[in-house]
Image (cartoon, rainbow, N blue to C red; front, top):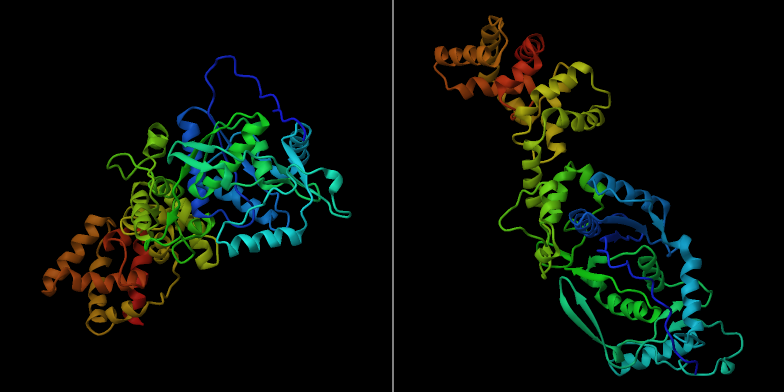
Length: 484
């Protein structure tokens, strides 16, 4: 057997404080899901809090499942969330030669070996383990065997010569010390029979070469951390600090699925959620700062540490997300909201908005945003601005425009035609005066007026609507409804 030795570790940083470097490393085999987005956020916040570096690596070694569309979706999703990365993204597949280089060095040092086990032999190992109710694992049959005994025509894989006794301890910054018995882990494959590197090798080499100091990811990677730690140590690499965060579950406590909200980040954008609200919500899924619920990005960067990450799974709740998004909408500048809603309205109406409509949209925003929880709801509430005459009222509005409601419209029209100073105060005074003279409650006047102006039974404050639409358009819509 070859004598084992380790590759020399990289030089120390001359006693200087180490710069924190984190990374988000998604596989581009699908959309950027909500769990991945939270992982990216935690890495981004930890790096920003420590004035460090946040890197992006695309782990595209699965060539059959990795797609350009998925890579583009990851980039777009991260940009929408505002999680800007430092430097150029690293494409893992492009570094395959470097990964293989390390495997060959491990071979030369006696820390890895060729394994000629056939697929049939590996299948038999699995069946035996299952029959004996053991976890399937490679039995090490080529670990100390002379390669001269290799069967003809079998291309070998390269396996790590992992320690067979003792323990591998992960000193996790969230989970605490997690202990793995080495005898329960086998010699993992580093290079496949065709010479391509495996995921485990690629990750370790990339994290070493990128000088990653902290690996923050889901706790479903804990077993990977043990195997990767063995490889770090065997290769003579410094082991990064690990922080494995609990996964996100659905409201019922089950694993998060599409029915719970396990959608791509772009789906939340399309549903009308604000990126700052999404960051706030994702932050509170597994991390806390006292009783604070509304946490700005500046506060999040200032406050974020791994000490406040919980150990239990968090639960995704659409209702809480919508309520939080509503708070952020109400806190947003009217001009920003108008800019965000304009393309949604253009899509709904099938045309570009005029400058006048955009101006009216911004003027209406104070009333619109009070009841909206998403940008979609905000756009729905603003449809009256882009409606063309004569309006097509919905079923609820039609009922308000029948019988007494229609009769009331003629009186409303006469009262408002006498108003020259078209302001909230003046129009409200005229309508209230009408209600008093007619001996009815204000709502009996306001409801048919709302239906005539918006085609709906609900809207922003009706006197705001009058001012937003302007005198000519308002009187025209009332006349249409009164005479139709």
